[in-house]
Length: 159
Image (cartoon, rainbow, N blue to C red):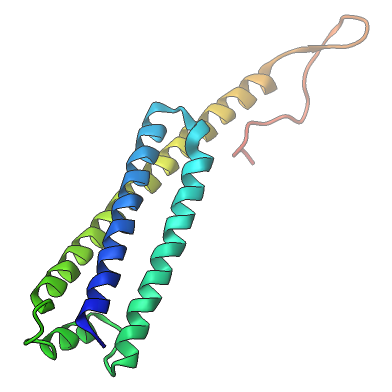
């Protein structure tokens, strides 16, 4: 396997990871501002990028496997050590390091957004519970205008 092919593949992966970071940043801004109208579009973008990244990862693994290396990080290290005389060896190994750092950052950013989403869902559930509790306490009136208690209504979460 040529180091240049791996270099190109890693370079493409880094470009896609940077795009993913931009989408995650936009998602966070949307979540923080509570202007959630853009979330469906951002979710579609994230899904498309995740698919593209998975395809690139499969290609990287295929290249390693076809060259007789394992497809994990150790396989990449063996691949690099088998190419010491190649002029792009150092550049490719540097890209691999950048890719690992970027991957960790994408995971961290995605996890943070997941935490924000969970917090937003919890806030919405609490508001809904409060509203339903108020509705359960409200008096209703029958056709003759007589006040009649609401029976059988309990706030969510009560048994």
